[in-house]
Amino acid sequence: VLINFSMALAEMERQQLDAPSASMLLVNLFQLLYVLDGLWNEEAILTTMDLMHDGFGFMLAFGDLVWVPFTYSLQAFYLVDHPSPLSPAAISAIVALKAVGFYIFRKSNSEKNAFRRNPADPRLAHLKSIPTATGKSLLVSGWWGVVRHPNYLGDLLMALAWSLPCGFQHLLPWYYMIYFLILLVHRDSRDMSECRRKYGRAWEEYCRTVRFRLVPHLY
Ligand SMILES: NC(=O)C1=CN([C@@H]2O[C@H](COP(=O)(O)OP(=O)(O)OC[C@H]3O[C@@H](n4cnc5c(N)ncnc54)[C@H](OP(=O)(O)O)[C@@H]3O)[C@@H](O)[C@H]2O)C=CC1
Ligand SMILES: CC(C)CCC[C@@H](C)[C@H]1CC=C2C3=C(CC[C@@]21C)[C@@]1(C)CC[C@H](O)C[C@@H]1CC3
Image 1 (cartoon, rainbow, N blue to C red):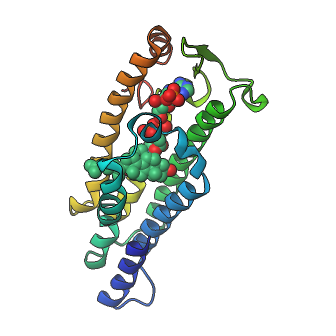
Image 2 (image 1 turned 180 degrees about the vertical axis):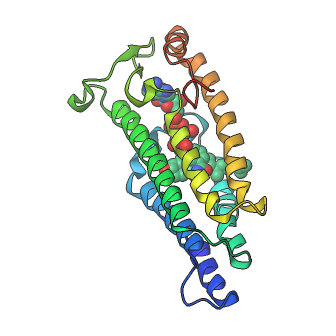
Image 3 (image 1 turned 45 degrees about the vertical axis):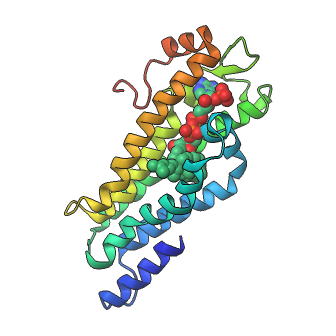
């Protein structure tokens, strides 16, 4: 957030602007929302793969201290020297994309987190689930009945909304979208193997019921 904010100030200085450009504001506000949401819903991080399976190690230490701050801010860095004017229609479309992505991301992560915390929660009574031999159940309706990783789908739509304000003149601001797509497809495969090992037949049944991984009818 601080790096992004300093990029906004650098842009104003370099391009002699009285205020940051619309594209710089969008990138800053979108990423600020992501960070604030992560802090506000910090508890939901407890049911992510990193904490459930991977544990703390080099990837999280290096990722959080170096990778995230210095590569996730590349869109704002790019905009400092590469103005990318946006029409009101483009701004509205990008904001709408971010809102849809955020809605899917937040709702699906919160649904799974609430279910893992208390499967008997009356607010989740309408959801169907399959029991597994471990005593835990797997959701097969609601967001987790649409695709196997609805939270990744929402996150990817948001990633697209972070890159779009920078236009299509250079690959650098698209780095995040490309890297994130690879990271999430790989994470999905790792999670599939881990869940197959943990839940065996119940997982196979879940995969038969919910056929698509990230995008309904496509993948
Ligand atoms: N911006 C970034 O750089 C990154 C962002 N993220 C985001 O973080 C969030 C968390 O992602 P991640 O930890 O990878 O994965 P998930 O939050 O999807 O966690 C996967 C785990 O959820 C449980 N689960 C899977 N399917 C079901 C089901 N049908 N019903 C109930 N539980 C189920 C399983 O664990 P169990 O059964 O043991 O509870 C599984 O191992 C995502 O939104 C992702 O996009 C992730 C990585 C990087
Ligand atoms: C060094 C690498 C090539 C990869 C590093 C990966 C890490 C940057 C990510 C692994 C899982 C992450 C999660 C988040 C941030 C990125 C890392 C650390 C969140 C905390 C982002 C905010 C979301 O609300 C939850 C995410 C959980 C996983």
